[in-house]
Length: 366
Image 1 (cartoon, rainbow, N blue to C red):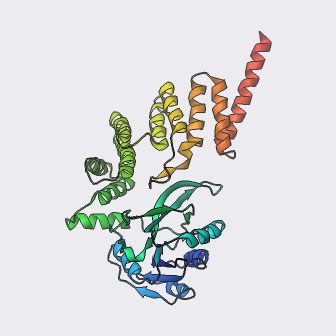
Image 2 (cartoon, rainbow, N blue to C red):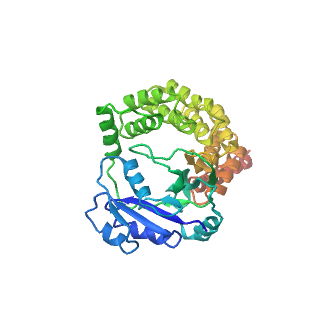
Image 3 (tube, rainbow, N blue to C red):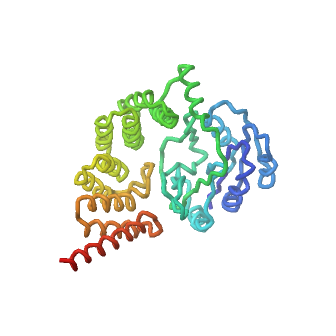
């Protein structure tokens, strides 16, 4: 059976570290923990799980810290997690099975990363990450922020998710500060770094500069297609905020240059027309969202509701506004099949019930 080193970088994670390690410690063969400057009980907690605790000074570079952690590993494969991640207990046996099947011809294992959830605990935002790496292949993380390992060699995919369960508020300005520091140093930005810098600017309301950077990224040859699809969506958001409505629609349509239509983009275009009372056009795009293929094996950011509930409930609105109650009800029922607890679905049931009652009274009065 293959052996795996869990390699983690941590800082002030006393709230979540034990939960993380409890979920994975019985599945890996060693735990490498690199502390980057904790002042709480993080190191003490880590000591209950491993003796292999190392220290690395924080230099505003996540890749540097992660690569140091990989260098301390001694097993055949390295797996990384963050302290506020868990491997769900219901997937532990599947992980063991996959680990037994793992051989030295594999270079990289991709696993789903669930990072957002609805009120029922169901994942709403999922994307793949390069989670397990063959140590002898010499893989390295790149990027000071949003670090990643470029895909290479033989890549396999496991249907075992890692779940991000954040418990504490983080420094929301940290990533932006690191990118601004890179800019001040005149550091070279590769496509990925430029894309994520633009996203940080958008998050912080710096829409004009974000718009400019998204456009620059979309014009570069080294941008990954999945990032470009998302960048087109984020560029549209900047344009809306800046009052450039037609530019926003143009940005969304540009996403189709990079691949077949995705549910997320189709929903965005549908919303563009819905907000402007153009219900026939909106319905067309929401119907395309329901037909769209969900790309789960490309690393794309997948918003689950864009392939079911969101277009269905939006189509209910569109057809109701166009006076087609039969279709509107049909799509509300479809929305309910995805999220039966939704307040929108339930309120629509009441709305249509009242509407039918009024129609019956009108007929009786004729």
